[in-house]
Image (cartoon, rainbow, N blue to C red):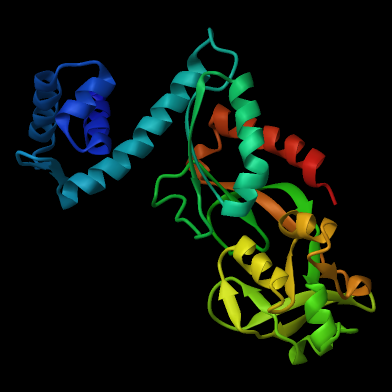
Amino acid sequence: MQIDDVRIFVATVDARNFTAAAKRLALSKQFVSRRVMALEEALGVQLLIRNTRKLAVTELGQEFYERAKRILSEVEDAEQAMSLRRAGPRGLLRVSAPMSFGMMHLSPLVANFLREHGDVRFDMELSDRTVDVVGEGFDMAIRIGTLPDSTLIAQKLVDVRMVACCSPGYVRRRGAPRHPAELARHSCLLYGHGGVVSWDFVVDGVSKGFEVEGPLRANNGELIRDAAVAGLGIVRLPDFIVSDALSGGQLVTVLEEFLPMPVTVYAVYPQHRQSSVAVRVFVEFLREGLRGRLMV
């Protein structure tokens, strides 16, 4: 089995046909097809199901593809580390980040990073779902808040201020809560999925959780913010999501004397990526850039 055949197979699966893969690799379609067949013969398994329209990946082919992606990533890292002619990071970085945070803060930082490091390419996924970093082949993910136990390496980037707020119209109709315990009698707009939601506030110098309920729950902060602007209830969101609405008077803060504890933004990545020059340099770049934009 040759490493170049593995690269050709991965490119073929990504492209879903030999023609597109050949064009991407600057090779002939016949050569690409022959090398994939040679790889199948070397492994003794069928990796692809061929038909006239497109390729399908067998179950074993999908397993090999996922392992091959990680192996090629390791090979690329080794090439970076061993090359004396290259001083900076290079290669592809697959990064997942929350939608709102990515659009507001990662977007300009990624552009600046690419201007400084022209040998790096990004494959960004902006989504409020929690991706399986290892299983889905990501090099890094941005996470906000408390991290669950996992084997991922976590690097703190910056703390973000949390804000409790609602529309002026909601205050006129329902009044503003004077203590976090009063939130139980208010309509709260909840970020996240399923289960009991508890909002943390600092009471008498101690962080305490208060259970909240309301008419809307969603996994997107901007949707929740817009519902608050429409007068549907109280939100507790990161400052970067609600700052413009607060400045414009569409939202007003509540419970300011009980400011909730800041939440931390982390970069998390698999253990096998900790030797990656590109990952290390990008993490430090984000840390410096985000502290300049979001420091509490």
